[in-house]
Each structure stands twice: as C-alpha cells, then as structure tokens.
Image (cartoon, rainbow, N blue to C red; front, side, top):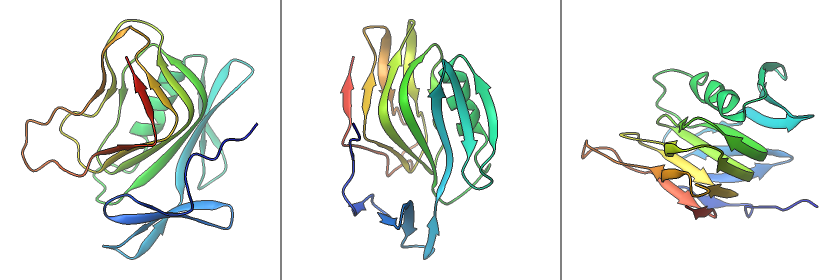
Length: 168
C-alpha cells in the first residue's frame, strides 16, 4: 500500500513544494531555483542505506538507522543558505538522537521511533528553516523530548512541523 503524505503544493514559508514529473522539488521564492532531494534513507534486509539522489550511489549503510540518518544529515552542504532535502522511507527504530541542521527539509514516509532512552529524539536546537514533514515521530516513552526546537537566539526562525503524528 502506498500512502501519499503531501498534496501537490504546500507552502513551507519561503518556497513552494511541488512535484515536477516524478521528482519532488523545493521552489525557493528568494533564489528562484529548484532543489531536488539530496539524500534518501531506506531499509532493505535489516540494513539501512543512504542514497545520494544527485549521483544515484549508496554512500553509507549500517544496521543502526540513526547512524545512517545522521550521516545523511551531516553530509549535506556545510554552511548552506538554501534548503536541502532528505527523504526517510520506512520504519527507523533509532538508538541515537537525530541532529537536524538549519536549512533542512525532512520528509518522513513511515516512522522514526526512539528505541532506547534518549534526551532528544530530534535535536534541532538553535537552527533555522528546519521543516519536518509527514509520517510519525514517536518518542516511544523513551525520549524526554521528541522534537527539541529550543532557541536561545531570538533570530532563529521558520521552523515547522507539518502533517506529522508526533507522540511521546
């Protein structure tokens, strides 16, 4: 069964998310450019893979999904001022906090679930332009904070969570 978790157009506060053919893209109003998916993380035979969508190559794999997801998040362009996107397809029982940097769109097609005790399931402290979209984010009774958007800097803005089920 396939579940479509987004309509054709979504305002994500700074751009429009839409499908062009079979390729979902971010159309950024400020730069007038389209950004395809940077990475896709998926599971096959109890191994999690990070696929670079620009090259089509598998760049990382591990039996611990959180390690692969964090690898994809940290492999995005450093110091960028544009949105880069990662798609998470499947069920991800993670054993580490996921650290999401600024200017990141995370599309969850499935579930991220805390597998062990964690202080934060999704760690987004002092980040701007973080979009978490779709799927289920489950602290599973093990995460003290499911999504940590704590901001100590008043200029940090434009973080959004949409069309998600978030539970503790």
